[in-house]
Length: 448
Image (cartoon, rainbow, N blue to C red; front, top):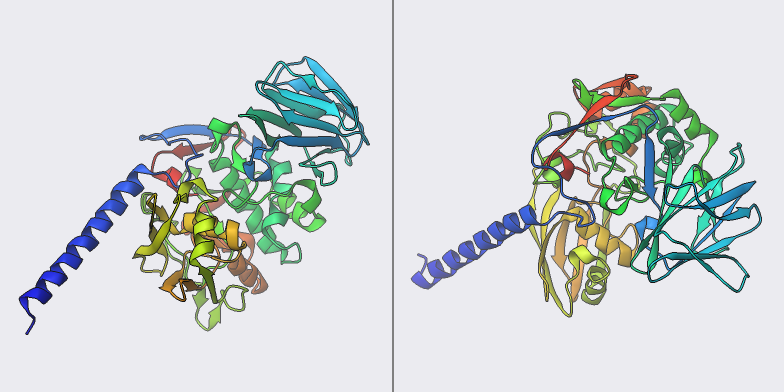
């Protein structure tokens, strides 16, 4: 027999649990998973994207820097104010310009010179005067770590620091995406699948970070982009072989995403983004077919990592979305999907947060290494004044598994079959000459 006191304790626990869940729902409805992303429209907004659309990519993980250094691999480059034609400076290959954030303007000078020159605009454009196969703009945070990029660069003053983005045509952008996302030694059908999915992803995310001036980031918050330095003949061929091809659902661009390893079963969009919408082509797909496990032998088939309470606290305070302040108490899993994906996390500290598992992973990985918390498919346990995370897979688990694409290509599946498996009822089509429709609304734009 259960005592009245026992019943009372049980009732209190149930009430507290319900309050936490309701709070999670209310907070999650209010708080976007990335505050840098502008709010999406409540109703459907239809736009048209074109073949070889221009893309603006936030470089350096879109982190503003005090100083930016720019040069070129060949030829002359010029500095302009914003989109205007007024020229403020000229450099040539072998010379490096230093740009510094000021109070109201961006200053620049040749490296080694004594004086800078104020610009009359808070946005600066740098571009080559002539383009050739080996002429690229170089940019970095010091004159010794410059990286080459196609297209042109734009520098924008944010506070007293400089935000940099790269503007270039879609197909040239993809040449720096596919090798950053997939190993060039993988089968050509897997590389082609990545090219088509990355092209579709980029087009859906045009103007994602429009309030900061660019479309996509160069890291995992969008899709990885390494510029010219990561390009390879194999991956460039995959881009060229699939030129203008995208994933379409009925008569519109599909909302596609991808991840590294599924852990055996992909997730639905609602598993990962509870505030999004159910899409028939973003539902769980098994990577086990008969006796063949297309998720087997990956680097993240299973993993387990521990971190101290102190390191977790420090990691949270490196990221604005999960900043907890002076003290941090607990992390609690608020819900797990049928596919084993953690949906929402409750963080208690001086400042409390309810965030997605992937937002937690991003904050933890900045402090503890990129693979400390590889995916949202994990269990959490308090251990030795810290927390142990044990799980499988890498990434959010929705859409195409890159490792699964690799394995399926080894079994002679072509890129259309691979894409059709991970995005059922979708077709690979060429973008019409007059463009393709893209739909945005509050729920769809949660999927990222």
